[in-house]
Length: 108
Image 1 (tube, one colour):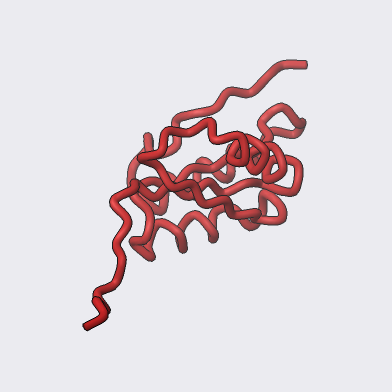
Image 2 (cartoon, rainbow, N blue to C red):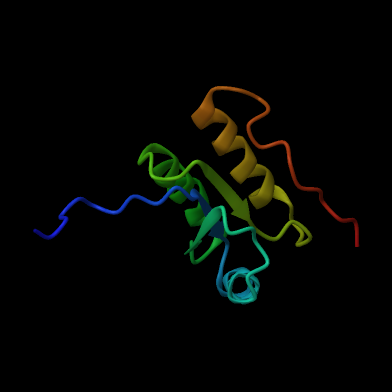
């Protein structure tokens, strides 16, 4: 008799939301080089622009598929309002002031 039980992965699933093609290509190359430990299964999501990031984050977080959802986006471009707006929306979604403390703004 053939075993028809589904196969479950014991890997930790991590979703990385990329701002656009540049960030996606960079992380895709790292993924192809196997730089992450085998205990992690990395899923890349190209948001196609920073305006789409908050909605993608909320969707990926709420669907419960991933143990961790990260955002990878530019912070050095002026004006910095778009980056600050992404952080604000993520914090508002979680109802706290510290959900997205990361990142730094470079002064060029």
